Length: 115
Image (cartoon, rainbow, N blue to C red):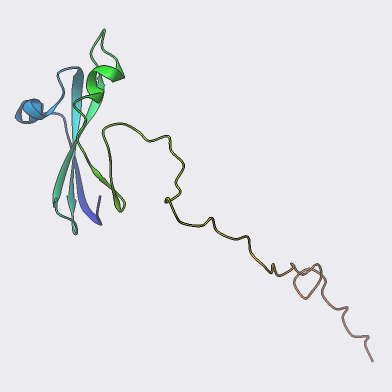
């Protein structure tokens, strides 16, 4: 979603989107989202469950590529570490400022003595 501006939940018009739903999935409700930014100004999500006897593997092959953040998703989840080849590992911080153990917020000064 890119700056969503409107959301609509619909369970009456499932037949309009049946051609876009995987045959192993039983859509029960649609979630329509309008976006202010991005290439797709309207996104449609189906909520529901797998049909009896079906598994996640049955719908994995039909998974569409989707833009997630700044990267393009693949059809299979990656188990590789998130390190770019040839890029050095980040160095640990050289200086860490110690947290104060006392001060006005944790150890207020005593009130002055009266006259």
